[in-house]
Image (cartoon, rainbow, N blue to C red):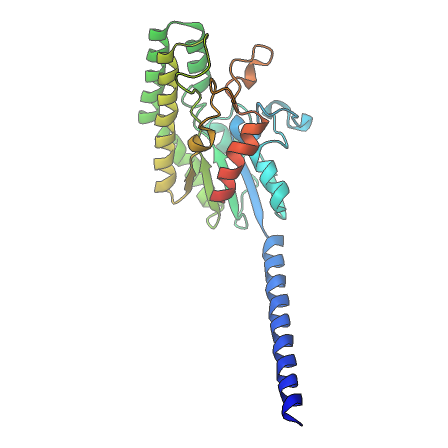
Length: 269
């Protein structure tokens, strides 16, 4: 065999081996993708309340394809996607009603939880309808609950997730700050009330982040993503008081889910 033919044969062999390796690698990646399982747990911030287009089959849970878990699943096509997040959920509701899809084959879990336990809805109702001093007092009551009681409740949820899906990557997402201070709003809550509510959101997020870290989970803050898109910003990704659909008040819009929660979760996942 001539030197030229010998080199050609060696090159051909190398190309065939490289192609085979590439195909094998692609096959492994496809197999890994095909085996990937994602479970989305949590409250209304995960079910998508405020984003509209609710799945009638989800009833009062108000799940929607516009929520960040469904958007992520549509973009990444996991083999299995279980969406059990539910509007109004507290930690006890997650434990009682949402964990069934979790198993040893679950690869990814997302969750927002804790706001309802801390009395989020009652805090906002008090602040909208009553005086600034009453609002601040109710906020402080909620913060005390976050300090004394919520950590143990979060531990129960996180322990249950870890027990059922010990190999899963768990992403715990936080809550946004609700108001841009000294923003465009000229009526409604006082600046003192808005500042107190923002402070309560930060306090809640810090407690959730601490418990998530202690369990080896990833905490993903959305506060930065919503900066410039708070209520009173002029370009809000959050509903203010919605008297026509009161349940959507203080929840992310569809833009808040796709522009706020989704990229934060994608980066953390």
